[in-house]
Length: 417
Ligand code: UD1
Image (cartoon, rainbow, N blue to C red; front, side, top):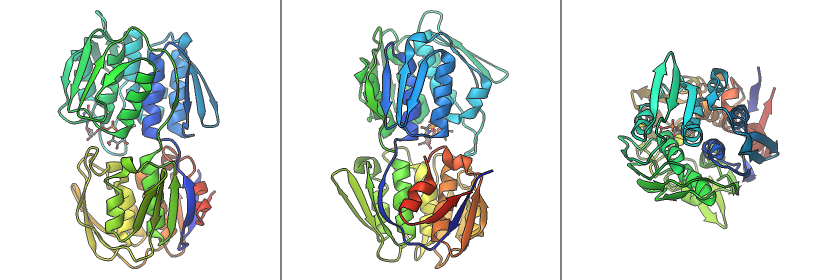
């Protein structure tokens, strides 16, 4: 089993290019199944979840080739509507294939994605919406069997919560449906805008993405196009955090300020200097970090739940006490026990974490409990005195192309063994 071995207390500095966003690439790859002509994705990150999505597409009969960060998909041979359980299990976000396969084939059979390290991941909103659109969905022994006897048709859908995955599934199912679909209380995440921009470039008629009402008018077919995956805003936040926690500085290339409007001010409140210019983001942490006012995770444009654990690590080295409220996922403080082994003083109760800043963190043997929690252990490790070993790093590899390559480029002493 691979591990990351880190010798901490090196000030990080340098320039880094942020890779393409996992959470944009996965729905984009699924959406390629809706197209009738060749699709080329550029800036597609080399992540285990991306490889798993390509295997699902191949299984459906599409041709999927990867050359570096370019993925070329030829959808002409699509013939299957079933995703076998072993492929569904490889990637927890595979439910995003449901809307695409159903939209294109009028049928879809896949296994129910189980719980994950963030707690149960229900898909009730996805299912209710697709039923409103004419799908008949049977759930038996963990298998979802879906078909649309009269075809998928447009519907007015009101989501009880702006779920990212449900919004993506509805948009994909609606592109080739009969009539108009309107989603109210839609998720507004930049990854939704990326998905809609790609589909519109292929001839879809989607308006309002990025706002809370999204309208989709069905079309007969979608052609192909070449499309660059947006940069990963959570990877960007992680690397800004790496500079902040070590008292260093970093300039991020291929990072968008507009995606980080709720995150950058928190770094400033911690005492960091942040500049955005020409598609770059600079962060300098010349002064010791300070505690911040309560951070509450919220759907976009609120503070992202995926950046929460990075801030738990950074605030652990800030002067004073900070409070975090996690409003999106239960079980999202699982890395706290590991952070405590490194000297972090964090108390959690339900949704709330109280982080008392400490002067020093200490190296320890720790285990990644989830993707972003794993990244927070790495950040604590680069700031800690002595040696840290992070194991179970396959979880970190789901979202970072090579966290050790990037941090080493900025001067961290970190190796994969
Ligand atoms: C996506 C992201 C994930 C991010 C999350 C919130 C991908 C691949 N993953 O996950 O990194 O943390 O958005 O920004 O893009 N819920 C229900 N019923 C449903 C659907 C969701 O109760 O049918 C609940 C979930 O349990 C959770 C909340 O709604 O508490 C948000 O989930 P959702 O926005 O759907 O997140 P994902 O799409 O799974």
